[in-house]
Length: 416
Ligand SMILES: Cc1cc2nc3c(=O)[nH]c(=O)nc-3n(C[C@H](O)[C@H](O)[C@H](O)COP(=O)(O)OP(=O)(O)OC[C@H]3O[C@@H](n4cnc5c(N)ncnc54)[C@H](O)[C@@H]3O)c2cc1C
Image (tube, rainbow, N blue to C red; front, side, top):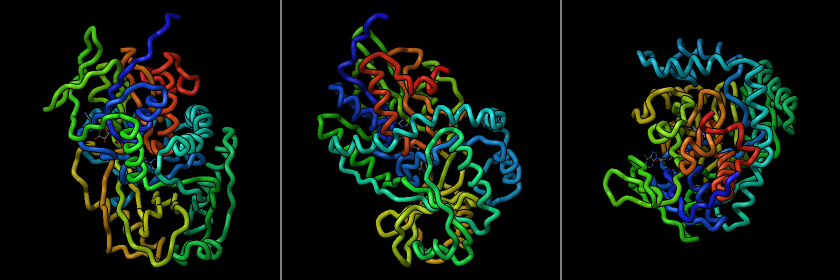
């Protein structure tokens, strides 16, 4: 194989978890970086997400029960899944493609690609910490709670499948009273819980901001308000053009634009359909400290202690990525959450937020070179970009610097 020269300067488009983790690891390899974001650091889904570093739960979204759930959701205005009733052939093609993969065979195949990366996800955070990134990660179990024992059956089965797939997962069933002894904010109607040990969580906005500071401290440039419209390649490398502002030069480009990725990446042969699976969050005050994240799988609500408040996140809404925030979806989360938590003030909501999970039709991220060997993409992690972001950035930086595709990245080839 002809030896490729590592680029000296790389332009990273997108200052979310994926863009900044890639930038940091490029710097580890002595590559200069310029990060451009049309809004600012953590302006996309890397801000208001649930912040779980939960390799034990990073599993494919598409599985057989999703079809039944999806159909039921169409008739329930408070369902966590929301698909607008409108003529949008691209969206319906995407959903059909997704539905076709809701089989156990597809789940097992996708999961086999997640297992090896999930195993390394937490270490990748420790590596950032050892390298001077000041953002804190908190070790804690995730407590999955249910109103009835019958409702826990789905997760129990999923845990069996995760074990079968080869991922170690340390879990323990506890009853409602034991749960409330640890988490008094959980309502007395909750009957049982599964404690998923060995996970972590972060305040994602703060963490990504600390990653940006680390990149800048090592000489990286980060430009906010830099909306990239085109990449032009000439003999001297790339000129990255923006709507307004001076173009920026680099030897290679990484497109890490989350749910907006197709806008820039499609022309480079990244044709895997990707849509924004929009999620909502807000924070509420709590009557007693919350020591760990709480997950209500049946209601699809994720709660994370952030500062002295609780972030409540949920919903998968397949609207346009830039559609305005729909307060009806927030009300639906509140409605579904009320019977689950008693020690929160649902009316005192702060930081109401919507963000698009970059969901690919086949459930696998897009990480690696495009048809142009100097244009790379990093993204498409759907529900798991926080868990897998640092490791993805590390592996992609290795590929950019060495020209060799790490084995772990092969299933995520963006030109598949
Ligand atoms: C409600 C919710 C809860 C979640 N919870 C978790 C969780 O607990 N754990 C987990 O692992 N994952 C979670 N996720 C998923 C996770 O948030 C995403 O996978 C991850 O943040 C994606 O990061 P990213 O860097 O790819 O994209 P983003 O964070 O969206 O960043 C993309 C950036 O690109 C910029 N951009 C776009 N186009 C351009 C352009 N043309 N020029 C310049 N800049 C541009 C945007 O401004 C944005 O800042 C959750 C998501 C949601 C919505």
